[in-house]
Every structure is written in C-alpha cells, then in structure tokens.
Amino acid sequence: MVIVGAGPTGLTAATLLGQYGVECLVLDRWATSYPLPRAVALDDEVHRILARLGLRDSFAAISRPHRGLRLLDRDMRVLAEFSRDPAPGRHGYPQGSLFDQPDLEAILRRNLARFGAVTLRGNAEVTALVQHADGVRVEVTDTATGARAALRAAYALGCDGANSLTRLAIGATMRELGFTQRWLVIDVATAADLGQWEGVQQLSDPARPGTYLRVGATRYRWEFRLRPGETADDYRDMARLRPLISRWTGDVPDRELEIVRVAEYTFRAQVARRWRDRRVFLLGDAAHLTPPFIGQGLCAGQRDAMNLAWKLAGVLAGTLPPAVLDTYQVERARHVRAMIRMARIIGTAMTAGGELGDVVRRAVAPRLHLVPGLTGLATDSRTPPLRRSGLVRRPRLRIRWRRGLAGGLCPNAVVDGDRRFDDLAAGRFAIVTSVEPSDARRAEIEGRGMVLVVAGPGSELHRWLRTGAAREAVVRPDGVVLQAGRRLPATGIRNRLPASCASRRGR
Image 1 (cartoon, one colour):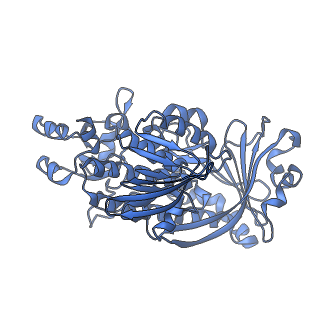
Image 2 (cartoon, rainbow, N blue to C red):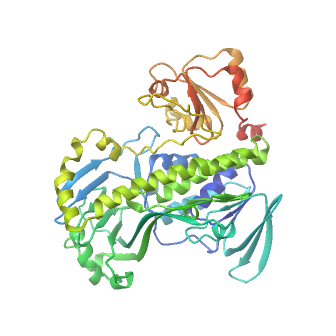
Image 3 (tube, rainbow, N blue to C red):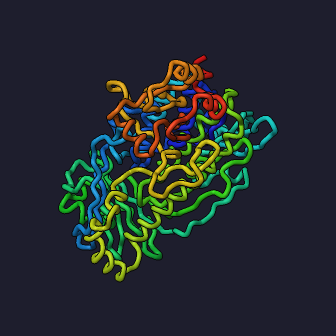
C-alpha cells in the first residue's frame, strides 16, 4: 500500500492499516511535518478515532475542551451563546477539542513509528500514478537529490491535499457547492492572559466578519473576511493587525504578541465527483473542501481514513470481498455533503447580508434558544448517520418518528470497569445485545472472531438499543452500526456478515 501525503489524514490511514498488519509506505514531498498551524478543532467522534490510534492520553495533553460558540455583534455584545459541556460525552471525550495542528502531526508521527509494517519517507514527491490490473505503479522523485524511482503497490491512497496530484491522475474533478470567500487567518502566541471566554467567538460585523478562539495555553487564532482588493500582505506586522484584533487583546503591548502566521485562505465548498478509480482512492482535502465555520475540515479526512482502512485491510487479507470497497464513496460522500451544507448555512447566517443581515441577526439571535430543538442541534456534536449501502442495512421504509440505529455510531460506552466499547471491540466486528445469548450462539459469534457485548439492564448500551427499538446491533470495525433490530437470527450471521479482517490477523 502506498499513501501519498503525510498530513493527519495520511498518517491516520497508515496507522489504522498498520494496526491490521498491512505493509504501507507513506510518501511526503516535505522532509518533515509542516510547521505552521492550520486546522485547530475536532469533535468527539474524531477524538474517538485518535484514541483508536493509541493517542488517547497524548492528544489530551496537547488539546483543550471546546466550550461552545458565542455570536457577537459589532460592539462585542453577546447575541446568542451555545455552550458545550467539556466533560466526556457519549464517546468518552469532550464534544469538541481545540489544538495546534503541528502538535497533532508530531504525536501522529511518533505513534506511527510503533508499527513495523509502516514506513514514512520524506523528500519523496509523487509525480505519476499508473494503474495496472494487479496494482499501481507510483513514480517518485527525491526532492533532495533529484533521483527518480518507481514503486509497485496493491492500492494507492491520495491524501495529498487540495491540489492533489492523485485526483488529477484519476481524472476526478471537483463539484462546486456554491460557497467561496477569501479570509485572513492570523495565529498569535502570547503568555498574556487575554481574559476571553474559552470558546469560539463569531463576530457578526457587517463591515468585517471575524472569528476568535484560544487554541492552546499560549496560542490564539483569528480569522477575518478580506475585502475586495485586500491580501495577506496588507497585514504582515502587528501595527497593521492591531486594529483587527484589539477588541480581544485590549491593552496587551505589541511586544508581548508574537505573530506565528498571517495567511490568506479561500474558503470553498467542493466535493470530488469521483473518489475512486479502481485501485486508487482519494481521502481528505483531495476529495472535499469544507468551509471552517463548524470545524469539520480535518474531521472529514479522519472519517475517510476510518471508513476505508478496515475495508482495505479485509480485502487484502481475503476476509472481505473486493465489492465492499464500493461502499466508500457511497457512505462518505453523502456524509461530507451534509456537513458542508451545515457549514454553508452557519457561515452564511453569521456573515452574510451586510447591514440588513446585521439587523436580522440582532433581532433573531437572542431568541434562537426559544426554537424547539435548535439549541440541541447547535450544541450536540453528533453528525448524521451514514445512508444505506452494502454495509449499512437500513430499512427502506421506516416510521418517521422512529429513529433507527443503522448508519450511526455505537456509543463508546463504559462496558467493563473502566474499559469502554472500543477497548473491547478493538477494530473487529461486534454484536451488542440486550438478550443473553445461548451457548451455541455465543460460540458462533466468537468463533468468527467477532466480539460479543451483552448490554445489561440499565446500562448505557441498553438504553441506546432501546432508543432504536432494537435488542441487538451489529457494529462494524469503525464503530458504525451495520444493522439493528429486535432479533438478528443466529443462523443469519454467517450468511450476512463478512468475517472480521482482525480475526484473520489474530489467527
């Protein structure tokens, strides 16, 4: 397996595959990780993925809980506040976390070294991908020496960002989803206490919409929409930045504010029309670009890696049919589009409309908490369930008020002492049941390398099953529910479920 790009998506995919014993070569054009900050936020579903990689404690050490969102008017008055509980939620982690991307990439790289099947090579620029019936030819140039080489791999994963060569190689184009804005991104380091609320502050100023958040103990991020004709070069020193950020920095002297980065970004909403061509796949920004207003850009790439890695590992091990790879784009593209739509709506509501939009926000925002369900939508980190696929078996006809479990994530509930569901499942298929199984059924499930979790009365998993009017659920290695119902026949498990790719490794 060759993975093109060693950003968070590529490193996550490599680690997951390494956990299954899949031999991987990660190629990156840079000698080391990119040193400047970019992504700063992720949710508890993605925090759960990092824990699966073995980074539970190390990520907690470099991150801080996301306290929620405040919508401010141009005079810094709070129009609305949507708070998030920093305590662990249904997945065992805070609903949102803030971090510095170089710190995240550093722990991902250190962790990757634990897997002997994975090799990371820097100064390696992929220049071409050529597919054959049994694999992919990857042409590479050493950026330090100019030496060229050609490699062969069973599959190639393009995790090479927005300007993806992999996407170009498979002839995929991006579909515009109707959102393009130019923004100035400012990162500042200071030991001074700015005395600000520890959450995301969205400034709804018709003259200059902006965003503020504290990323780390001494790191702060601002984003401001650029006006026509402006560029990042207009704001390269603190004297020119001061008018923008002084609402938050107050009387902190310029000498105590270190500019880490000033950059211009064009926020886009795009999704690739095709995420796969035979043995080549697109992940992360190579496949989609999300406006940053709900902090889902990096999250989407992590979800791509989690969705695809176990399927590839199973196909390579011979325990899953190659047809399961067809579910990757079916499942992920719909989910990405849903998150992009949400980001567009939030971004437009917070920044659009000029003076008229400002008047509307002043009138409406203080009353948003009165709209039934809206506060929960704004504060709940849960993302939409995956739609039907060969690995998500949702009934075609459902009673509208009855929410099924298939396609959603099984909660990472405490199951045994201080162990959670993910600790027990460990990347395998699992059966969660509130019905005590017979010895024969237990033997069949465990004999297939699957994990059996009995949800006792009153437990979190028992309550979760009841919310979906189910007694049993089949959970995939990525935590997604494949199927749920009142009773899943024991005789049907062998016929309807693929064997776990992890079980082959264990044997």
